[in-house]
Image (tube, rainbow, N blue to C red; front, side):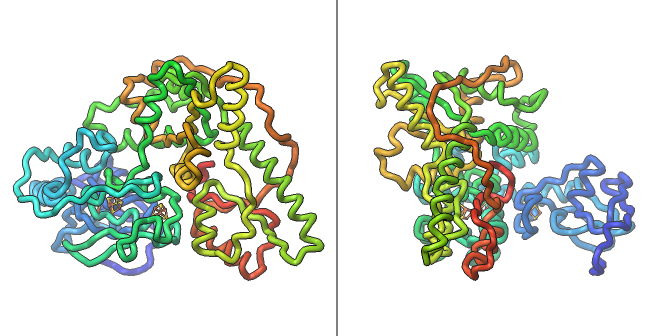
Length: 478
Ligand code: SF4
Ligand code: SF4
Ligand code: FES
């Protein structure tokens, strides 16, 4: 294999399972195979993360090298003849998978990732019906971390995606690998609970885990209980970014669950269909949280203006003011920049602001006891759950959050066919929220690796912004 720097402007010609393909130099074998409509199975590989090539499920035969190579971690080269599907390769992949499955809990039917699991999908596509090895691992109970996420290491396939995400993408380093080879483990420093580690509960490890080894703390049971109780008023408040996350979730399932009779949607899910689906689940009212976000921003601006005015004659300027998309951002600053905690601008989250107002308003208007109202916030990421877990139980009584993954499970459970739903519109309300007509805007920072850089500049007094808003994930989710 050549080690020179690939030139993406230069093409290379090769064959994959006999199909001629031309791709830019440096293209990985998995991507080149896609161009030939050949799907090479992967498990540890993730398109947004560095290649560690730990599982070897993607093994292919590559002539001229005299050995098997991991397709996810190797580029194509001029004249290569790659075989992805020989009897030898299938047997190797089956053996690798059986070695993973032998120690994997056999509870797929009631696992949260049932029918949305990359391991299950691989076992199905490789036709695994029997396991020729004996279980050696002992299973420990899953750990619930701050009622935000659950880690069930019995199900971990040691792909290290979560480690890559936490260390390299987020630069938090709350989880890491231990030991090597067959003893490789995924752990926290000194095996601490995440609450005692540097973890900021951004939830990004959950989004890359291919199996049910890290998942969101599930509150569906409490929500179903409220929905089934016709004495209760169950109110949904939907974040504007939620519909995009639901579509993303659906396309993940589309990609991995072809063999499970999964029905492809004829068109992306619209806000109207989302509202219809939520109502079909039994919610009494469905509101748009957008107005609460604007009100939340207005509250922050009022606070910021007070702080700016004060800063002229105060030694403690506390600028730039720092705000975040979730409680996790506060924890990030407390963990990594404790001397800058005073920069955090105090405010209620949009979800909480809205839940409080809507409860008060409907309790008064409909003559409903406050205790009989449940509000459920449909949020794009699980970092919102962390806020609730850290506040007084009474403050968040009857308030829940639902991620797109959890809603997807509820929709499947209720047998709702999203495609066939008629679009519906949000309920409207007469809730008094603070005025929204200020033009002040924060500097938005996406992802915690980037946030580290900005916070370093604040620490050195080199940040010119008056207001910085940190979003814990690198994608533009909210
Ligand atoms: S929640 Fe975020 S900070 Fe915590 S372990 Fe996962 S990726 Fe790391
Ligand atoms: S917890 Fe999930 S993402 Fe992390 S190594 Fe295990 S299977 Fe991979
Ligand atoms: S997918 Fe290539 S080594 Fe795991």
